[in-house]
Length: 211
Image (cartoon, rainbow, N blue to C red; front, top):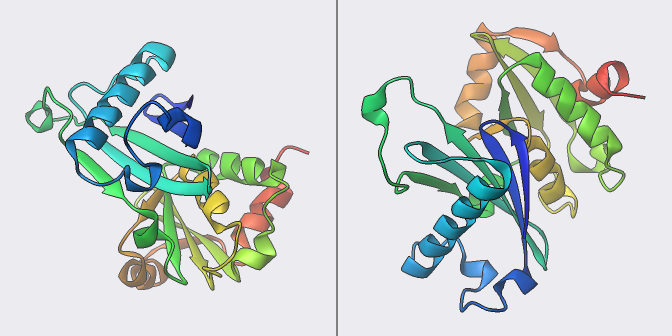
């Protein structure tokens, strides 16, 4: 198991098949709501707290998962800090899980970046990954600014592309996936400001990635 702290509120966990050799849990069934899988999640969170100082007590968690390959499973865990303490709880039952089948099955996807720097950091990271061929994964990408938040709209996604899961995982290091992409895309077109109109990712790599 490998735990990486991406930001103060986000970590990435890479699990491999050998990490489960001493347990009865199948990595393919890890997202099922069972006592065994929930206990394993708590063990992982306790380990993250000790190793990278990622404290999840009293916070709602968003857990996004994808398969890197047949032997590796990637979790991106985001901690939401509520300004209103009434939303907090002392346990870890508030978990929202997004399965890969719900995420990577559409030709259009939208990712939300907290600021422009996060988008630039994504461009820099994707530029360094030689295993991803952007031209084979999607047709177009546009970056919008709406309510002080940046949104990357990706259209024409090749859902059968072998690098799609890896591409998605890199995106989740710097952004959040939106489940209501189709309707929100039209809202962005009508009410947002276009920051990069054509080939947003490749343009971002050209101007903002480290050479």
